[in-house]
Image (tube, rainbow, N blue to C red; front, side, top):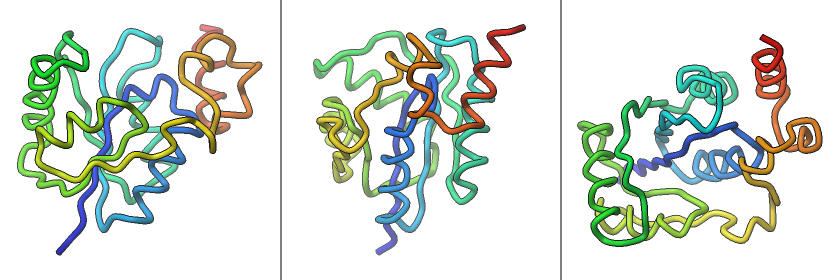
Length: 158
């Protein structure tokens, strides 16, 4: 049976923890979808964030998730709202595995009836978060690819 994985994120910005997750999924799956959520956490468009992933991982299928639901949480209601939205975004894609480093992964996998694949939940392999990177891109530059760093620095100047 063909293994089809997917993951979701804002990738605001894409960092080496995200890359570790994507690379792990690529090693384990026959096909991988990365769903990039629109967000106002960073002044970089969803299209630009998707470009980073496409440039670094040309075999990945990237899907833009525009106008996502505002309700997030670990409760069943929030998970259902989010997974209903994901089903719409995924369309005809039939995944077999959901990859994440987050607690919500088990709810998403359960609601989509796919296997939950947790990667580096404790951030032992790549000890970084997008929040830290956003707080000081220069201090945490070692955790982002050069194309991401250059785009962030260019956008901050303009």
